[in-house]
Length: 162
Image (cartoon, rainbow, N blue to C red; front, side, top):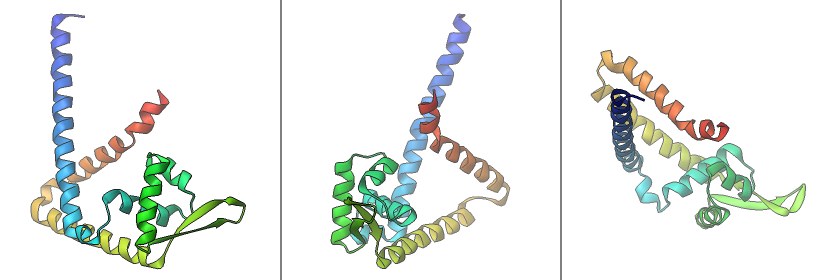
């Protein structure tokens, strides 16, 4: 490999690392802003607990083991999140009718209302922010950025296939 090619690869790697750092920082700031704008901070629940709750809503009734698998976390972490959600009255566990040794976790009606309220707050903020900050001629660029973020979100499954 020539020195010129090595230099190009080094610059490309540096640009990717720089972009990765900038993307991480921007996503962190946006997530924090979404939590604030949606009123999440006043709930007393962590972001991971709310993610688990949303998964229970989407996938439930579901076992704790399946939740851990879907969220890519340990069973202990799921158990902690579920304990907090149960104590907040947002989820309940019932015996699995097909295997009484297992418990199926389901969301209570109050959980649906809570998640809907949080999502609506986030959507409202993003809609207003897009209208305020993204010029009409940049909307296509925003669509492309969203597509790229969606592709990046699948990178874990791409790595697993190699």
